[in-house]
Image (cartoon, rainbow, N blue to C red; front, side, top):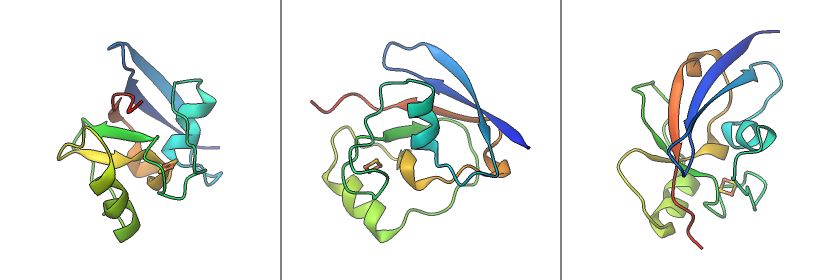
Length: 107
Ligand code: FES
């Protein structure tokens, strides 16, 4: 099975390198949760909660956000130009080497 590596900066500024299989239909939010990073994923990946909000630090060519993702980001806190909902990013080999940072906790 093919695996990619993603580097995640947590809210304390600590980097974590996570390996993720490309053939199991995971999204980035699920991989962050599996790695026990503090991402709630409250809506289960439906683009309805923004608890999986992250910033994209690398210049990967990512799929464009859907209308649902854009609507949710419009309502989220601490949104920047490089904000994405990690649940809307399927794990695929093009994401190898991706660098992201967890957005601040909105609570
Ligand atoms: S998990 Fe709810 S928007 Fe991503």
